[in-house]
Length: 432
Image (cartoon, rainbow, N blue to C red; front, top):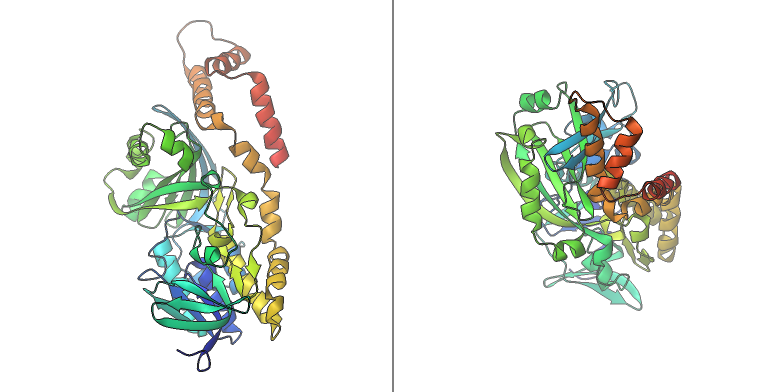
């Protein structure tokens, strides 16, 4: 392909939610768009849980969520604290939550299915999606990015968009990021475990179309990180995320710790009889707004989705897919608004990220990073909570301790002080 013969308005590297949302919006506006995906199909290389807050789909196209490849609507929001063989589960359940007559809130998804559906919608709008192609390098002309090279092919565009994931090769090629820092990353492992739909509904006390999203704390042997469990129509997504630096110093592997989680008395009955149909591992951004790269664009080049660092982890929920879609829409809007003034795309993009409330949302959640940086919340807090509950419900015939003495004794037994917990509480209040 010669530059004179064929030039795209945009080339998007990566057919995940960010890339496909960007392609959909651009193609709908009549732009000539090429999406290049390294995997054999969109979503084939993705690992996230996953879960989507469907306001993002509504921003893409009102009403589109009704036809999207979604699994179960989340009506049970759960937090589980694990300590040894014990477990505490907090379950917020509202039957009308996420009901059809309300604004859509959240659904579980299978990324391979969802990503392929969204890429297909972009193709329906006129975008070209080319899979099984690896981009080798960027083309730079007179200080701006002008296209990409894949094998022997050179492809040119007004704008190249990096949607190639957390360790973006394209962004490194563009000189916008260096090698990723282990301090801001987590390594995630996930299994998709197949089970009959009725079995899942019975085990999680769900109605036919209801789903549960469960965050797990205390499942990483004290390593910074946590776990997740999402119910799909006919499978369960179970996974853990660990800080790589601490894993390297740990005596046991990530795989071994994850297998212990599967055998935990509070988890094993939920997945009993299931068949593992997918096992994968992946890097994920953990730093929130602090993980956003200082510069998200240069002339002829933008970063979106995970490549830009758009992930929010509050401890009780993880947001990535919705932010990816919003960032893709923001990038597309910036290109459309630029018209012939390509140099304005970058500044337009930052304005759109603010207008669509992505950057403000990430800044608002920044306080959670301070809470999650506290090292002892990953082992001592779950153990403390379970100690208190065990003492509360144990009846021996002796005179029971006052609640105050029970709590203070458990705090001391776990090597903590009231002042440490108070400081954590202050951090928590500030995070709000």
